[in-house]
Image (tube, rainbow, N blue to C red; front, side, top):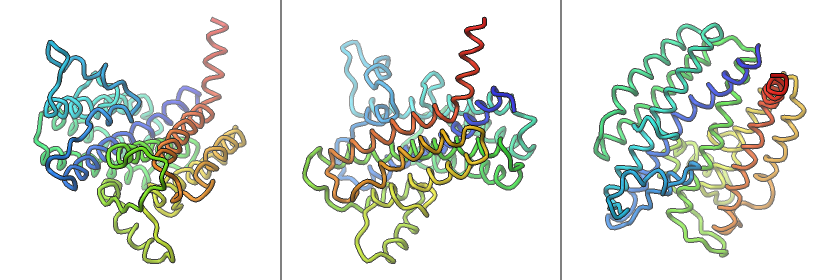
Length: 322
C-alpha cells in the first residue's frame, strides 16, 4: 500500500471506533445520572476535559454576557459539543465527516457492503444528531448510534480481505478503543470518587459496565474467581473481555506481526502493557488510579506515533526535499 493509504486506513479504524465509543461515553453518563441522587451535581465539563479538550474555551460561546452558564445550559452545551456541533473536534458529527472522507479515498480497499453501511450510518447521523433531544431520547439515540457502528464492524469482519489493510484498520480500532475505555473510566473516577491516597473501595459500577456492554461477562467472570474483582480491575486487566485494555493491546500485537516495523511496535506496546501488569491494581488509591490512567493515555499516544512512524518519516523527507 501507499504510505498515504496506510495512514488513512489506520485513521479509518480510529474514527469508526471513536463514533461508537463517544456514543458509549454519553450512555455511561446517562447511566451515572440514573444511578445518582436527583440532587447530585454532575460536572459536565469533565466530559470535555477527559477527551483532551479545554472545557472553558469550548463552552465560552454558550455563556451569557457575564461568562456564566447554568447547570442545565452547561449540560445542553456539552451534549451539543459531543453530539451535533459540526465544528467541535470531539463531536459525533465531526467524527462521522472525517470517517466518510477517509472511506471515500479508500474505496478500492473496502468491500462494497462496508461502504454501503458507512453511507447509511453517515445519513442516519446527519439526520438524527442535528436535533436537540431530551435525556431519554439522547440515550436511545446513542444506543442506536452504537448499534449501527457495530453493524459496520460486523460487515467489515465478514467481508474484508485479510491483509495489511485489515490489520492496520483493526490496530486503529483497538488503539482507539483502549484510549476511549480509559477516558470513560476517568469520568467515573473523577465524578464518583474523591481524590485520596487511601486505598479505594471496591466498586461494581454497573453504569460503566452497561455502557461498555460488559455487565453479563463481568458477572460470569467474578463468579469464577476466588477473590472479589471490581470493575476497574476487570476493564484494565481481563484479557478475555473485548473492551478491556489488556485485550486491546493483545489484538494490536497480533495485528502488528506482519508489518515491516513490527519490532518497534512490539517494544512500544510492551512498555505500555507493563503499566497494566505492574502491582495489584485493587491496591491503588484514587489518586494513583487517576495517575495510572494518565500514564496509559500517554503510552497510547506514543504507540500511535510508532505505528505511523514510516508515514511520518516519509512526510518529513518530502518536506525537506520540497
